[in-house]
Length: 165
Image (cartoon, rainbow, N blue to C red; front, side, top):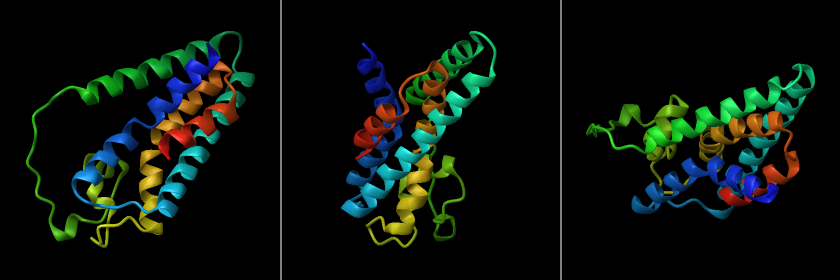
């Protein structure tokens, strides 16, 4: 049963990555193997950091408060994912040349093609670092929740890495 929970964490950590992969495939933007490995490694680091921080919090918070806080955090993340999947008004946004440099995680997740800052049609090493950081925010918050619930840091981080790759 624990492995199903760990697999669920890996899938929920990589939901944004799946959407970005589809977007890049449609727009013919390639992610070379080395860049993909870098993005997966960044996801691993964010997940591991979140879990270790969550485990640390669970040691200093009294009683069942870590479990309640972890469950609430995971519930909030689930609601966020559901709300993001709901259809909403589509705004036709034309990206000008000046707007092609990513300014925030939200902008990269809304328009993944702006991570390709040089418009080469391929995600390079530096672009992969920026993209990996933006895509790993779910892994960080999921890791925090998993750490508060006392799940295995290494198992979740490795499955998150494999799910992204």
